[in-house]
Image: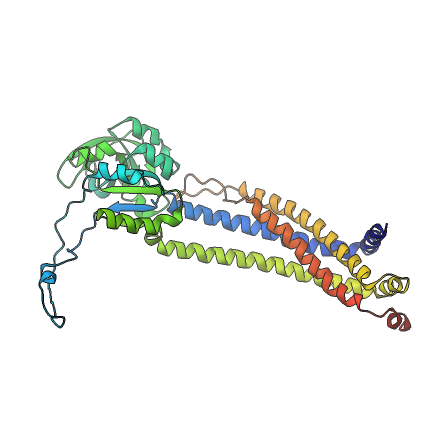
Length: 419
């Protein structure tokens, strides 16, 4: 009965000052709605940008690096610690691009518990020939099934289909820039000429568009066997090994381990995309900083309104305390009032934020560089909604607690004497 009375008084305070209560609730509503909309859009956009790079990047890339021998013959000569070894005009070590014993190496790496998939690749330069036009480009011979499963290559093929590439050894998916420069399209034939002079006539079955012009102007994809045939090498010829891991955080230590075990260059995704990771971190910091600022501003708005509300209710507070209500009872009344406003405003804010986010997600967003993206990216992560309602309740609790604690200490005699 006693608790019901406190709830009743808090409810009457809200009803008798309905306009002020609505204004306070709207402060929560629009603060939470803006928070949900902004963070859903920004994290969705960050996810899109991350996907453009990370989806197409292996967690670890193995290849033979061209360079001078690390240990020069002069370094093996015994001498005193004070001797100086001066070597001039060091030339790169003659080395093939192929990975030695690649099939055996792939089987060995596949047994590592951290590894989710291993995909072989043959990379080579080639000339695209169509009519009287010759273009320099890069050809990637791939295991189509692995590339589609782990790197989502099909998401970047439009028009055309990656399935046609897996079904035809005389097929090619060309970069969008290549297709534009050579004025070719689906169904047309294109001639590839390797650095060794080998040539193949291939049918275009798709156009690859990553959104990065410097890639789309040179890159094309063929079957693994087609690439080997183009450069005149056997089925065991592999130039690159791409590795996907179960846990991205294991990329750096595993890359170092593979370098030591197999004497091969191993580049982890963090090293290969250090600048990109920095940009992503900065965007995330800005997103969360702006979002938290919005919530704090909404909290101060609630505090100001409830503070004025309590000032207007000084007479009521004095009468309550004079009729036997303790300071703690008065404090509970105003905290109940603040929490009720926060819960109502926060709930409406979540609904309004979802409506805004959903509306943005239906707005057309079509650009030539990203053919697979048709609308603005939105991240409907429920975590943000839990954060929003939690902050609404916490903010309104303190917005009610601070002025209510002052009302708790108020002497009713002093208030009534001034009347």
